Length: 127
Image (tube, rainbow, N blue to C red; front, side, top):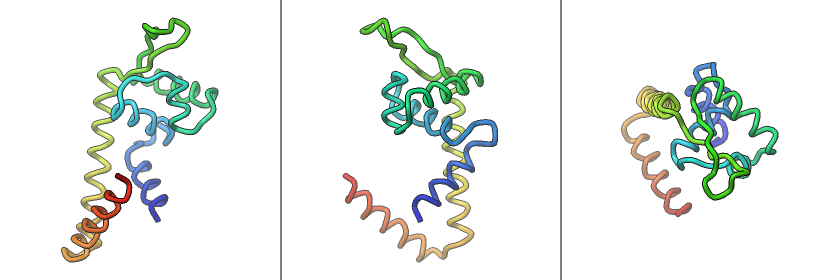
């Protein structure tokens, strides 16, 4: 159930020009800040070669920048460009609006309260 909802939210946000993997990396950089490609690969559970492809796609869209790591000249630090930050924020807003609209259309007020209560309990479980 959660996997299907997560997939739907990713599909809503991609807008067709980014892959779900690119959207996930864009969102991670927006939430967590700059990172190395190897750290991103580990966090997203993909091979470094796959992450290189994902990052190349984001770079083609002008959403990320690379700069040398000040602590290790062999590595690069990946961060969002202004366009990347705007895109991540826009994607998040689109997902939130879709979810709010879907819940409003499909659930009663009482059911929405039950969902919010359940989410609160799940949040405690993951803390």
